[in-house]
Length: 280
Image (cartoon, rainbow, N blue to C red; front, side, top):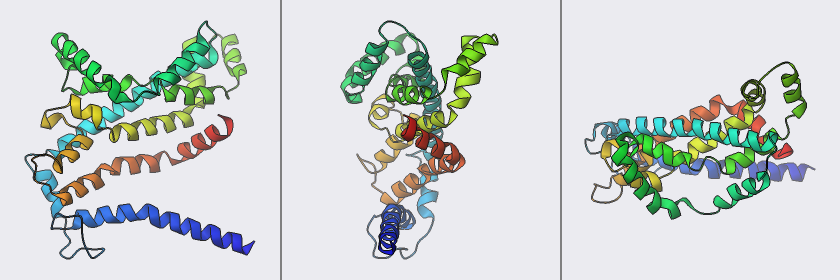
């Protein structure tokens, strides 16, 4: 018994070390004044916050603007993704209609194809949209949000449907007897009970969009319209002066919102993940 506990502690410590190594390396690179990723010391000689200062004062890379663009685009897309996904999940879980199973299967099959297969078609479509509605065309945040919403009825719908199936239907019937409409049942009964899974899906959507670079790199071309993923990639590619210290500093700051959200929604995440694993 003691040997098993010893091995468990050893595995836990090893997992923690492997998880912290990339973070420590990133911090070390961000504090390295030479602008390189290689250093012989954990804390490089002459360590300073110069890379962070340079990041916000570089005229060629408006980092603060990229940060705002990312929070607006990813935050709005994540919220709308959850709303669309839970609406579809509610329909498939609670309503009975012809083609229900076929629709669920079709949603799953569509998700098997990667996003870049539709890149050319989306590009041409949004060129035409931009001629009619410039606010939703190429190189706009609203246009990119619409592109991201195209995948809202995917895996999220399946995850949320599995969770909604665990909520007793008797609650809906009791609400109907009390005179509640379908909309009131959805917003006042179902959504509050599904809050843990909504938080999980929303956070996963936010993190996934935060790291997305392919669609954002094609749709956002102006420097001031870029997101963090596209902007930071540009710091170490192309004709830009490849300053990896500045890149590391920007990457480190880009993870701050995710960490704060995780800490704030931790209780919902644990409840949603465990419930989804047991009930889904």
